[in-house]
Length: 173
Image 1 (cartoon, rainbow, N blue to C red):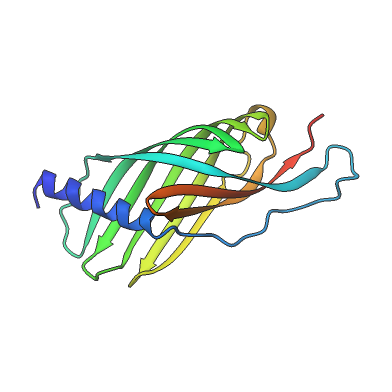
Image 2: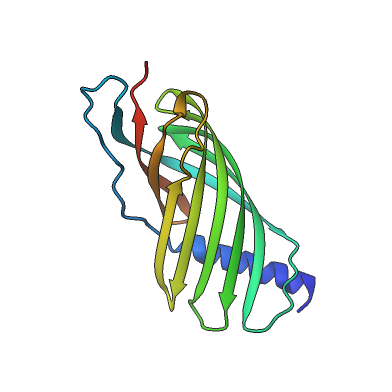
């Protein structure tokens, strides 16, 4: 497979994986808000744009085509900010079966609190059936977001990306 073919396949894999609008069903942890500094569970919603840039790979094996991409996102809504990240993909010879993992650092403002945090993605497609998990990496948050935990759901409809971020954050001092 030529380098151009490999990058094309990698781009197609990323579009397929993102096009299914994978979702995660998880609850954020809650604690008693009456406690001093206790965490408060809430959620943030909005939209985002994403730019995927294929990166070179060493894929020379048969069976599954491996790919790598850089991620650049811009978030709007309750979460205002940008992110940078890396995605690894695998597309099999079976139509509709693929997988990806990604790590991205988001920097911005979440409901008025400024800082950064890291999201960890894991997703699979099994003959078109999607399964995904997007979780805040424990203890990755900085600034006013220290202590952030949660999960994100991504939806893609009519080519537009949106998010629903269920999260827990200690009360502001």
